[in-house]
Length: 567
Ligand code: ATP
Ligand code: MG
Ligand code: MG
Ligand code: MG
Image (tube, rainbow, N blue to C red; front, side):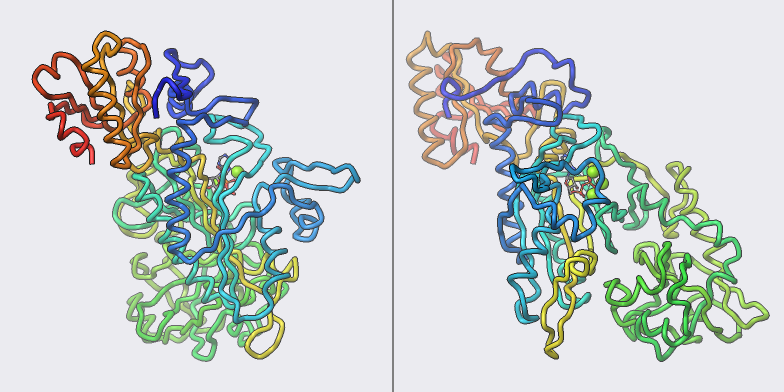
């Protein structure tokens, strides 16, 4: 690309209305321009970066087995009535009417539309699992659009939706997508962290967010420096015990239920109050016969009815409840027998805070022959409660390491939705027995446009952006100094430009009639990783100057080796 034929649009001055560095630099380097609140035009340089991200996302989605589709931005209001989100979603949902006075929305997300597609197209378990994705414009009427494209109203999201016959299958795909997300953010050169997350208005069960660590982030991420424990502060608060947990021996008991293989069976076996809303259940179980014991902590304001096995992928996985002897081994308890359960209620199962051994838990046997869940009261959970006021350096609730708190930018979010949408919208298939069965569903979002801003937050200096190679709008810039006074400089510059094009290098050739200082400043502002400078003086020596944007390193290279030096 020749600069003279390109739309460069760089600005010398800092824009006054940009609060965060990525927003400033995107405006100054000519990546975006504001049209109206939360609405931006992508200029060529910005769009090139955006396409790089999309390409990586496409590759990793396809490697993960997702299939690309494209759904309309405009969605019928009827579908939102059906799912129940017409009422629930609130003013972020932009509602519009067509000429026939019918309700439509501008899609903030596509669960309804994809469920409508799948319920019509998929009829047999043989067609499952299925994972569909798109990279597409979303609209959310954000109450406070800010930080440029970081929180805009119109933005591009990669959204994927998976459909399953069983929760085990959902779990598998969730895991594959989790790993695909890690690969994406690694390939994009971002420093990121997956964290436990709240499900928000979307509903459903297990959920993780992916955060890029940056001071300008809007979320507080709490994590341990001694383990993988990491949570969004919202989630950490949701996990805090409620007042009802003050006397845990009444609220929770350890149970020995050799016959119950799932929570549902547990509910049946103990004749638990299925319509009653209760707060918390702790089950100590090992998931596979030989694996280490896992304490599942579950809580929420749902009735047992709502948590029947099919609602909860993790609960639905067969649970082998621990024998008394196993439990004693883990918690080091004295003799005693196990009693019945009174008030269980599984809603959220949080594996990362759930390893019994991580808690260093003790046990307590009271005169009713129960194991009291002493450790819940005395050990980690009060600290989880304190996450509201946690300060960096506090011991981690997982029992390993100390807590750190950092600001994060949410760039991705994955959910195990279970049957929230498929049930409401009656999306079923025939199972192996020829019976109609409600689908299990997962959804997986990435903020493609937000990643551009997040990457700049992590890659810049006082002179501008420093693109990682994988994101750079151009890999190379060729800067000829005063070429309008020197045919020799111009000839070599043209030659190198052609060579770079032939070698398939994305190159910007600054052939403008500008002073060298202006060209250098623009190259650094835009953040192009490699620069070749062509000047009379170096040509006298048969060399040209190479400069690295990231390291600032300058070396002289022979003209004939210049392009090879970039590759
Ligand atoms: P946030 O908490 O930042 O409002 P969200 O939790 O509402 O985001 P999700 O519904 O999880 O967003 O959507 C998936 C992804 O879309 C988010 O992880 C984020 O990267 C991106 N995203 C959401 N809202 C916006 C926005 N207004 N502008 C740009 N990207 C967004
Ligand atoms: Mg939001
Ligand atoms: Mg969020
Ligand atoms: Mg989210």
